[in-house]
Length: 158
Image (cartoon, rainbow, N blue to C red):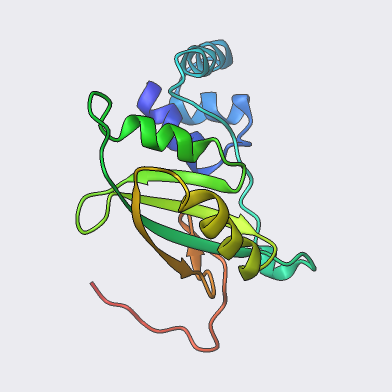
């Protein structure tokens, strides 16, 4: 039942307990208790709202930053990740396979602010070897939700 609940709330975090219980064939109390347990166990880590900032007046720039590091003896990548996570600008930190070690997701008001973050904060950390910053120009789909309508829909066949 827990995985079924997780799939439901991953698609709609605002789903009503009554509706979830009906869909799962469980009581509201069973669903509520399972959710509370998963929150306590940190399986459910938070609830978020997906906003299409392009449709607002607020300026937002999102960047993905590739980071290569020298792993620390004894702690590997964990200590470096912990230091990078402390910055408010950093929205997400991912350990990667391939040509670089981490990907950071950064959001700021301007490209200049992101550049200043990279130069003044990120690149000054001892273990950072190099970085590559990629700016997101347009979001078409985010977390499974289509954000941008294209002029003409392209038919995709499996």
